[in-house]
Length: 329
Ligand SMILES: [Zn+2]
Image (cartoon, rainbow, N blue to C red; front, side, top):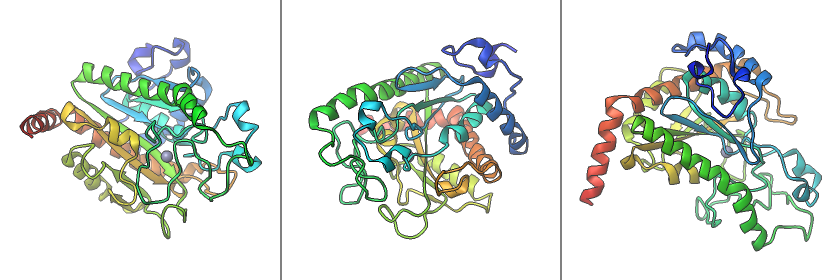
């Protein structure tokens, strides 16, 4: 099978992409197929530039995983406390979770190399808060989710360093996001951006009690068509294992809000998932294959629902009517 038949990116050596993938259209096939997909990804590895890796698919769907990175450059790491170096606030294993799903669907995937402690890709470059008045970690976080300082006393980054990190680590990812969405729009006329996140289910800094398992966000309807969100929630209503909410505590971060412009044909949806849905939340944050397979089957159904919608005539019609509305504003 040729590499392009399975949606392999041009940036990776062709021999690394060989394999007998077929697109998976049904979850019952997917669960079996996912183990194989994961195996192939782990063996093949992916091309990596300094800041991110991009897998280009052939469908109008881009999955972005901005908190998947775990590395910290040495000059920054040596200024941090020991507990920060284990990067506990990572969206653990989101690459492992989503890569086989993306491959099964022919979707593109982008994920960073560096930890959110270096720079948070899901915050605006000017450092403005996402949820004014609520606790959150910033563009260059100074504390972790447990409130403990990340840097040794007096070693915190300066304003000048903030600007440097934005240029070195933040901008390349955002430029790649913009370029890939432009490519998909040019090829398909529209595109769907899926922001894949995960967080521990109990995190008093951000919310009381235990978080709903699956939190869909469309910035209260600004980043994606309501019809798409309705279809996704209807799909979630088909299963009983995971609790779900739309535009609850997590409505979509900076990437969702910035790139989701339905009137231009780009719809963005964030899924914030509890980590207990697919892994152990206590260190060493182990992946749980059984739980993960169940969660992956549900998320695969969501991604397929989203892809079906964006690929359909409805996806085109809604974008056109939103553009008309905007012209009329
Ligand atoms: Zn995240």
